[in-house]
Image: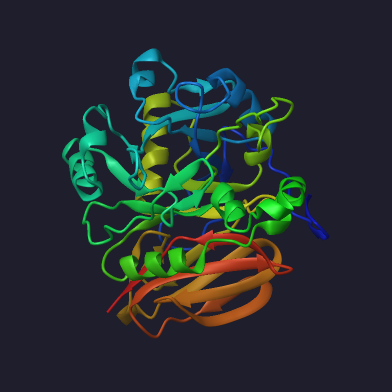
Length: 370
């Protein structure tokens, strides 16, 4: 059971770490072998500007019952040679990095063995170089942010063909969007009350990009756990953030080979075979979104042919407000734990779920092809 202000939502507790939760068989399509794993993406340690060591981060992840953590220290890739990308007592640590040149917008790079020289490149050139080195690029906090001690410009190079995905939702930046210095104490003491979900501009940008080609969406936490100037408490410690905006990946069962498992998680993020969940509202494990037709079932990140008359199907672990989004527009909705919608147009289709007005689940796209 999870609580958000006056909102309380009954959902099953997660006790499936390492084994994941096997998905219910959707009929034809061979998706029954996929498992649902929840993790924190965009995390910083003492190797860059985070305040926690990797063992401390892993302890917090275990306390939050995470399956994986994606560590993205600033251009720090030397961890790859130190054996950290492995299973650690039930938590998979996967490695990436955040490319954050001074005065430039930021991006996350995965499957990149060498980040040298990236800081000297312009944003579009940086994405091209990541691609040339075999990596994947996700735009971090795409709207940027400006306040005392923080000046991150927004991402503007949306025409780049090397954008793998973008950080659609980040607890830290969702909260910062409503932060006001005159209400600083209230903002800190009741942070969840100020979380409203992905910014409409980011969602619109994502849908627009996805109308041209597949672009995945992920949730981040941007965890640093920095202490205040007085050092008496930390601004959003890891164990708190690891219970907020998490990304769930749908992959074959993990737990056999750490290197292969880490790659499987990153590949699922890149393919859009994942969804975003706000765990403060409730654990979304068990969420399903597929396109079913006589020829089989398509998963998030995949394509279904309009000519096959697919039906989009959603299943939730608890009743909530379900909205189907087609090409950036709301086309259907209902309050239930199950919903269906028959697409009438081609383009990217996704699902948004809210409970008692609170943002809960945001799916990746299923692409309907004409």
